[in-house]
Image (tube, rainbow, N blue to C red; front, side, top):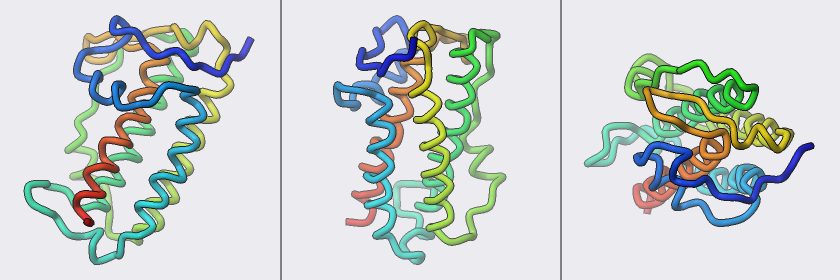
Length: 173
């Protein structure tokens, strides 16, 4: 039976370093938050000019285009993790080196293209989580020797985007 998950992950469902991301997610239906956040990040990112998107603002080391690329990468990697663990494939997974992703991908394209990719990737993840049967939300796997549940991964995805949106808003203010 499919459920719309509204229960927050317990502390035992994730590594402590994910706590700040999870803590910034409001209570409610997490799959709806995933979908609603598409409009939120679109409204912020659509106001940024191409010139603004290629500037590195001290003390940061990435351009806004690279930050959007990072959001895409995390959506894909964590979406894969959630998919694996939800399907009861709990074999351990190695973590990701976010800098290797940013260092080895191309960002010299319109910001609007990156935003479209982020929207599509997030929509795909949200629709996947929306169709999970009840037992899948509690399933867990190991990433870099740390346990994480499928529910916690959904919360990390929303919290991660919120975290970076707040930084982007300060950068363009």
